[in-house]
Image (tube, rainbow, N blue to C red; front, side, top):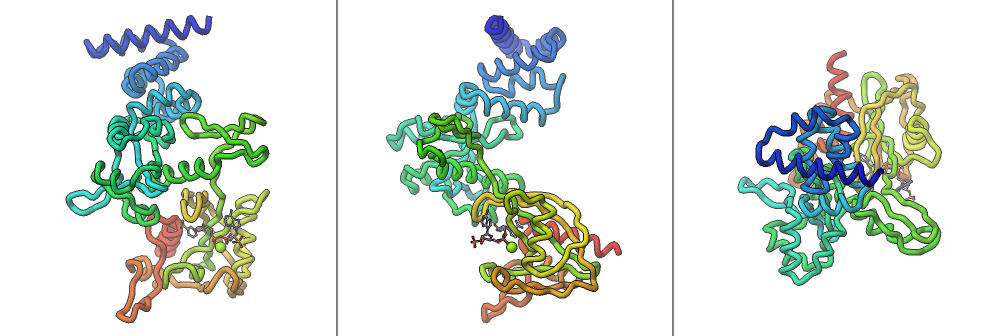
Length: 384
Ligand SMILES: NC(=O)C1=CN([C@@H]2O[C@H](COP(=O)(O)OP(=O)(O)OC[C@H]3O[C@@H](n4cnc5c(N)ncnc54)[C@H](OP(=O)(O)O)[C@@H]3O)[C@@H](O)[C@H]2O)C=CC1
Ligand SMILES: [Mg+2]
């Protein structure tokens, strides 16, 4: 029964697609005769036949927004290896070479992600005498605004310069690439790299020592010996901007670039809540007791490995605001006034005098969530 239903819907989907491509109006009729489950099924079948979002657009307006459609589509690709392989054939691919992403420079000198089509990648592999199967080691990272599945692929086994020449791009270290990219390209490139790195470092089961096998999307790995499923992980970190009502507290580690101060941050210990981590880190690093906290936002942070940054504002009492520095991790921690913070926010990093010494402190750039916390605090203070 199940397989009959599937077959029958596959046929329906095929007919719908063929008719639509000829007359363009059949979608309304198909929509009106299908119930929700059937729409799901036909949508799924269509994605197997012709690439997903042509079919989702046929039925999408009825049951979901494009965001929901994309999310469900990605969900299916993670569960269905065959559908994912199909999507890869018509998908977009971000290339990395030993985890350095491929960028290209526009005529105006700006850097952008160099997005290739899977067919282009196959062409490159063919020209370099490599097996096209390398494409299948791509991992699924998202879905573009134009509804095309996006993958990332590490071609570290190929000669870097040859790939760069063929693509007209350049592989750039992630730290630099992250600074160069604008808008949604920056988080996308870090996500692609983080997932590739996870696969490169989780090829074996930590219990049996046997190789693990990935699914096509790259969203998990399984040990075939003991059945354990491994999922990509991020290390949770709490980042907090402390305020005593008039000033905010910033600190620096000796490894930070010269003159840079940031909010306090720390990794969560096993079993801790976010609130407990925040309280502990503030006590450990600057010897202060937090009175209240407020969640602000979050960010995936790829350096040095994948962290999940949870950003908060917190207050301490002005009567108990004397910093008692933990000299091991922090080099300095200080309270700054609104005026000082506004100056730092305007400063371009790294501001240097002729001697190479910083002319004033500065804060992390806008793509770092620390910057958002500092901006929010400054805006809030200006309203008081
Ligand atoms: N996006 C942003 O705006 C900002 C991001 N960050 C990021 O936040 C993260 C945490 O900040 P940081 O102050 O360094 O953290 P911590 O204050 O927790 O100190 C780091 C130390 O904690 C230990 N540690 C515990 N668990 C982990 C783990 N899972 N991974 C790595 N080290 C661990 C290590 O000590 P040991 O080496 O002794 O074992 C490490 O040196 C950093 O990755 C940093 O890049 C920081 C500020 C701003
Ligand atoms: Mg810290």
